[in-house]
Image (cartoon, rainbow, N blue to C red; front, side):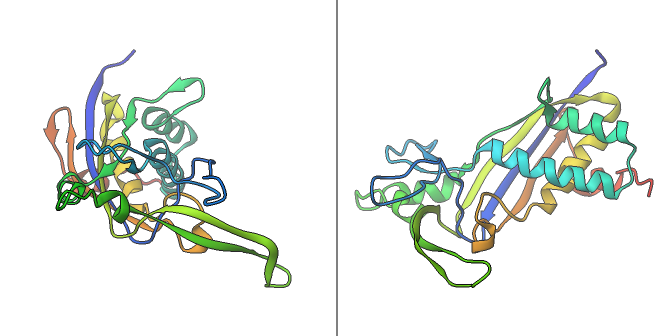
Length: 224
């Protein structure tokens, strides 16, 4: 095994529209599909939405593939970068994509006000939808459903960290950062206006040294 170097990216994701990342579970006669949620890291007893690292990883893999194709990378270089950043079924990647939780400072303000925990009520909502016939463009009978959503205008913080091969670490991390800047959607039901988001890169380190987005992305090889 060749030498490796540590890499870490701190990120903030802001929901520009409500988001649905479903559990596949409903709530008897009230909801057809709940959104993923759990206790906040600041100790809220009531569950609140969070962004699963697996969902973020899947979207970034998609964007990274598109970018490496657009840059004209050779198949072996694309495969090596994807293996290091995301892994394959039989080969774990070197990076860990942590779950993103509601911004600590903002969540702390809303966890309890005048003795009332406001965060669970402000961070999620419910909305009704109806399925349409694509041919007739009319609502289908009996196809009304309700989803639980993570509410818009909330910010989530988290990070991606791990190890990359030393020889390709700058290239691979640059590709990941470029994919983060392309991130514009998470979750399902995009056609219903859900899941629009934006990502902010708060800090980057490679080999325990601070780096900048500009220098890493500017160094991405382009063979097109």
